[in-house]
Length: 409
Image (cartoon, rainbow, N blue to C red; front, side, top):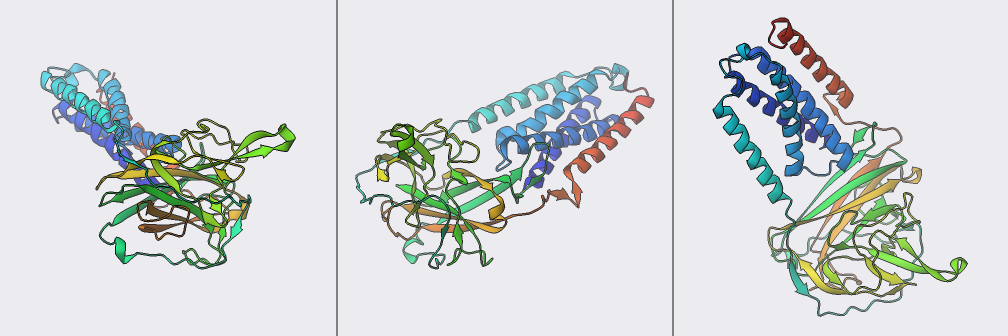
C-alpha cells in the first residue's frame, strides 16, 4: 500500500508537469516536455515520501493529492521561467493557458476546502444504563484461556458492515514498510462503513500475539499489555478508556494510566459519542505508563480506582453509507517479535451490552508481523532511495540535453 501511494504521487507530479509543458509549448518542443515530465515524476515521488513519513501514509486524502500537483507545478514554473521565449513560440504563456491554470487552481482549492469539512454525525440520546462492575484490572499481558471463533450472526445480515484496515511502519530517514521491525512503532487505521443506520456505535479493538500462527484469535494467544498500544490517537469522537489510580507515594493524588482495555480478560468498549458526562478531561494529559508518554487529543471515558465515573450522554450515529475511522499506534517491543493480529469488532449498544458478551455486528482480523530486521517496501526490488536516484539521473540527463540545445539559459 505504501509504495503504491508514493507511485500515485509520482504519477500525479508527472502528469502535472507534462500537461503544463504541453500547453506552454503547444506540444512542439518534445525535449522540454520530457524534461518537465521527468522533473514532475521526481518531485511527485519526493512529495509522496514526505507525505508517508509525516503522516504514516495510512490513507490518501484529496489534500495529499494536491501536494504533488503544487510542488511539481512550482518547479515547472521555475524551469519554464528560464526558457527563452523563442523556444516556446510567440508568447511565453498564452491567455488560454493562463485561464486554464487559474480555473484549475480555483477548482483544486475548492475541492480541498470541501474535503476538509468534517462529517456531521447525527446525535442519538442515550437512554440506557449499563451495569458495570468494579474493574478488576492488572497491567501487563494476558494469556487467552478460551477459543474465540469469528462470527457473522444471521440476525445482523440485514445490517451489513464493511471493516477495512491499513497499516504502516515508517521511520524518519529510515525504512518504509507495512510490517514493523522490533523496537519501532506500528501505525494502523480501521474504517467502519455501515449499510444501515448504526445508531449507538461502539467497537472493541485489541492486539494479540498469534502464538499458533493461524491468523485467528484462539486459546493460548497473548493479549498485549494495554500500555503498548493506543487507540483513538487522532482528534475524533471515539472515546477510549482512562484509569485514574490513587498514588500513595504521591500524597494520595490521582494519576492517569492510558489503556486498561482489558476487563477481567475482556476488552472494554470504545464508544462513538458526541457528548459524555465529564468528570475529568483527559485531553492532552500525558500518560507516563506508555513508552513515549502519549497524550490524547480528545476526552476519554474516566475510571477512578476501578469504578466507571462517566457515561454516554449522546451517541454520534453513523448513517447508511457513512464511514468512520479510528487510528491506533503500537510499540513493537522485542517480546512481540513474530506474528500478531489486530482484532476489530463492531457493535451497537441498541442490541448488545457494551460490558457484556454481546455478539458483534461484524469483525475483522488484521495480521501483521514484527520482524527482527527491517524490510523496506520496494518497486520491482528497488528501494525508495534507489528509485529517487534513478529519477534524478533521468531528470539530470534531460536537463543536459535541453541545455545543450540552448532551450534553457
